[in-house]
Amino acid sequence: MTQRKSFPEGGASWDRLKAEMDHLRADDLDWRHGRSPLYVFYNDPETLEIGKRAFMEFFSENALGRKRAFHSVQAMENDVLDFGLSLFSAPPEAKGVFTSGGSESILLAMKAARDAWRRQHGGDRGALNLVMPVSAHPAFDKACALMDITIRRAALTPDCRVDVAAMEALIDERTMAIVGSAPCFPHGVIDDIEALSSLAVARGVWLHVDACVGGWIAPFFAMNGRPTPAFDFRFAGVRSISADLHKFGFCPKPASTVFFRNGAERDQATFVAEEWPNGRFETSTLVGTRPGGSVAAAWAVLNHLGTSGYRDIAQRLAAMVDAYVADIEAIDELRMVAAPDLTIINFTSDTVDMALVADEMKALGWLPGMTRSPQGLHAMLSMFHDGARADYIADLKSAVSGARRNAGAKAGSEAVY
Image (tube, rainbow, N blue to C red; front, side, top):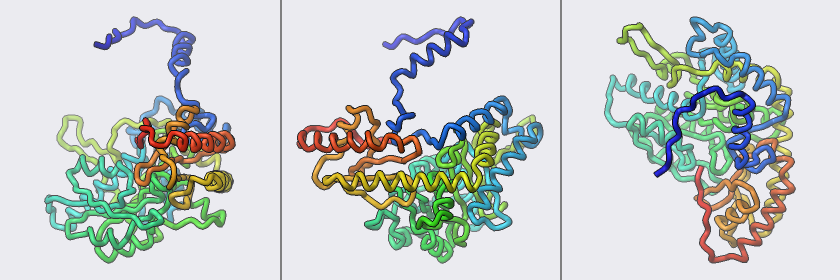
């Protein structure tokens, strides 16, 4: 039986606490040198420092009280949402919500889609379904589990984008929404949002675009002239878009956004309670208390970088991704699962067990990101991966050789998020 720690007596100095924290983190993965394929996003030291400083300036402020007490947080939040709306070709009546992360953004969009369907059908509260690609993020599973919505999963085409015809075949009169990804997390490609938009309009269903990974960087890839599929409100069927600031917006966590084609649809995501003694309680988010520091940090980072900064980041990211792809494809046993649209790479092999390759990479000090279908290795590349490329490729070659030597052995690695 594990011994439970008792509540501390107190009186520990910062020096002692800092020393203990340093001891605790001694076995953490060396993400600063590109050893992690996900979880952390990095551009440069200056952007990191500006985000930290802005966060700490509003460390104590609560964004729940932004309308009544912390008007500065409200003003900064409005600016961030305006920036996103302008970036995503939103019409004048479009509105957004600042959230804690992609899961919350997706949950709010699904609540709005559900409530919109109910209003359209006279308050019918019967069972509904969501149609989405097999590659869509599990946050949709979470939202549907919370709201008792059935998920129908559409297959992919050989280029790993959703099969639009397969999706159409799954839609019926109780489909509350369909989903496209920009890009999907497993394979790094953007679904055909234009085709999905046409389908949504034709069938009268809500289309949500999950741009949690790519939303705040893909437009700058396109501005630089790199072929990047469009995904935003320029397509009439797109009713909502989720986009994480704390991924390729390079803002401190927790920070995400969700945008709606009009304010009425945004309001359908709002939570209201009228019955308690303190009066009306209303939040546009699932959570109540939110860190004002996240809002301030996002505002500071977006203003610091601006269009020119993000275009520079997009150029550097694209060059790095191209270099990784070329190096990986130069290894005879490996091939890309799909040509990446942004920064996510996924590669596999027809001749070696990729789980054994993952075992070898783990032994060499890398955290192996993996996919199960097809079996492969996966990474969401950020700028701290740039300096690690030579070491990664050298170790990858060694890992492939090791997997080939150990063919038939039982692998210890498996695909987990």
